[in-house]
Structure formats: structure tokens, C-alpha cells
Amino acid sequence: MTERVLVVDGGASPAGVREAAHAVAAALPRGRHRTLTGQTREVATHVLAPMLTGAAS
Image (cartoon, rainbow, N blue to C red; front, side, top):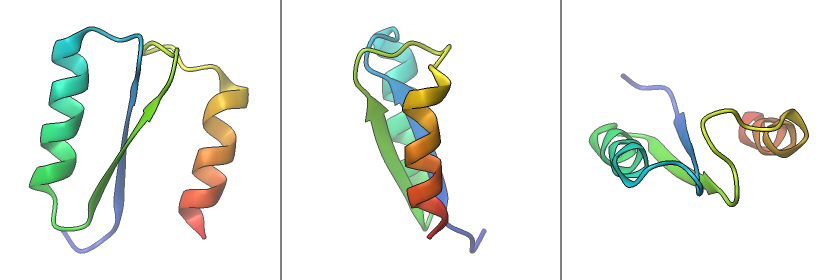
């Protein structure tokens, strides 16, 4: 895989989910990881949208 990949988790998600997100990002050649503080797997749109806009640039 040659594309950049952003792996996102929520800071309020279970530890296993956060650990898996870190592992996936680390396994990808161009993987990046971000944690959204206070979010669960049901991330609020207003929290996620600015990060995705920034990731596209």
C-alpha cells in the first residue's frame, strides 16, 4: 500500500480498540494515528470533519 492512511480512535474507547488502532497505523508504511479525546467509536461529526479536511491536504 502506497497511500497515506489515517487511523483514528476515540479516547473514550476501550483500551483494546485504541491498541488495535495504534498497531494498524504502525503496520502501514504511511500510516498515521490520531486519538479523538473524549470520543467513542461513534465519533461526533463536528469533531471528525476538521481532522479529515486537514488529512486531505
